[in-house]
Image 1 (tube, one colour):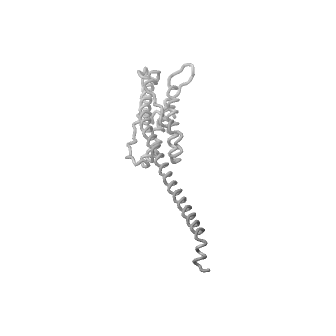
Image 2 (cartoon, rainbow, N blue to C red):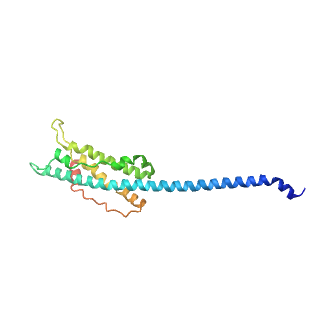
Image 3 (cartoon, helix red, strand yellow):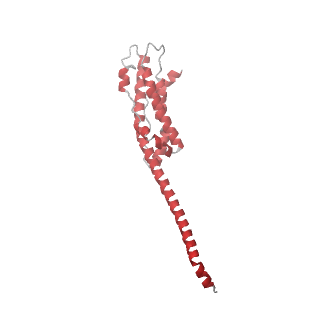
Length: 199
């Protein structure tokens, strides 16, 4: 019996083996391509989430900075005038409402797509915003309370919200290939009032 006749008998087995190997190689290649595609989709989704949150952060920073300027103006007025015209009252609270973070709440489940340092920075930003919202009504004098809250209860988290988020904004700008936005915001007499309250 020749080698050719011997190989003829094994032909179907060799064909099946080559087919099986080709199938395995194809499956592994397909798996690799799918993983690469999934990673690209996750990256795109993370950039979309970060860009949406960035837009909301920009607007909230401006609102909180405007509130900090207003609170510091009233604090200066109260400290320097005998009968200040403007004061912390219901009308002041109605005129200085900080918007709700709609996108932050809507995208909360997708925050995990972002790098850890961004998650921490964005969460701290929104925590500071919430502290501002909580502390603002406490500035209204309440004779039944027996003590008053200082303006720094609002100004410290407002300042931290405006300033501490800037490095995270720079990261998002790089991720989304956006131009760097001017982040310097006037906080009025905020630092002076905080220093005065802490003396």
